[in-house]
Image: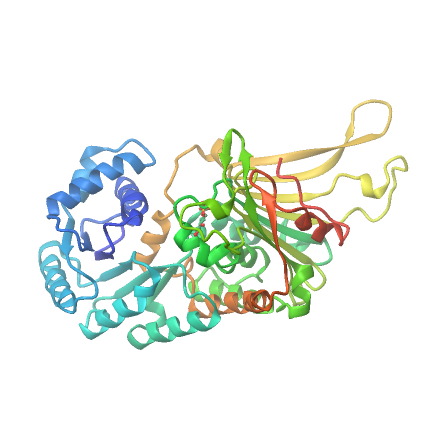
Length: 495
Ligand code: BG6
């Protein structure tokens, strides 16, 4: 059914997020008949713009960022319900004006008093905006209407600041009103992890320590830090990617089956999984964590300078742009199964995948091919750039001799379902308006994730691990290979 009725208010509407992601996603929802007539968008920012200016700006941006040819009739109908409020989110009268505006659109477009506040601002403003919304009575729900707030990462810089932010949000909002976005959960292939595991009888019986040797999660980016040096140099690869995106992939891959596909059931299992990740002791950090920064190099034809020469990066920066981790999950299913995670910028190519490595056949029946030379059995969930699932196994080469080689079975989303592209925010916005929080982060999940990485920061602060370097265009430092090599394993080559 179409989502709505509702007024969506975007704080920081002049920014990139609105034009690059939100509006194209809203357009896709509208084009697919998934946005009701009673939906209104109010953009709030400081620039002096009229409704007409704002609509024109968004319309232009839509042409640049849309995932398919824009149908002017669909956009025009949506644009009629787009408004602009020139305001500064720190000014107290902003919230009284916003309240009046919401009352107006409610009268005119029957939004039913439902309002979704999307905080597309820097994270340091989240607490202040929610507080002011609260003072203005804008977060109060009634039996006949709801109020929700969407936030994007970062949810704090560490455990303590995440707890402070959550406590601050709780003063004005119930947990069920807070929708924390991790954009990885908007990716089809990420959502499909649950379907693959729990809608099939085939995989789950094998999905444990008896059959799985280890799991590898790779989120490799070929871009460098680009224009985000100011933010990134303070964050680094661990903060930027691990407690959020990589841990989403980890949690979905390793969690227990929830009792149903409901928000609390799913989120409870994810939290339990993250809470079961063994906290590293400071002395373990050097052997379980590899951190590195890129040096100059070339990626394909593109030459990248060293990280320290990137704009807005400190010339003596010790921020990591690559991290590899070896983690253990302390529970019945996974005891003794290592989870290797790695992510970095300026790597050979863009590739996000989860590789499940099954145990080797126990005995070398084919004497000419010793066990260690058998094709490793991998189930690989390729998340981007290609969206596919592949299974690797050994087969006999035709001919009189018994010779084996590795072969694969491959399921490719595009080939099967056609290539309709999406922004990745469609489901998230739709679900939020429909009140389904399954794909959003609950506060305890966020805190559990920070809890896992906290000891790593502590060890680094006590300079317990070296910062290595790797040339841009490589797969990271050799030490990341060695970390697996010490366990008699290696990273699956990502082609
Ligand atoms: C963001 C990080 O959350 O995710 C970026 O801040 C990173 O540094 C991006 O590039 C990766 O997202 P995706 O969807 O391109 O894998």
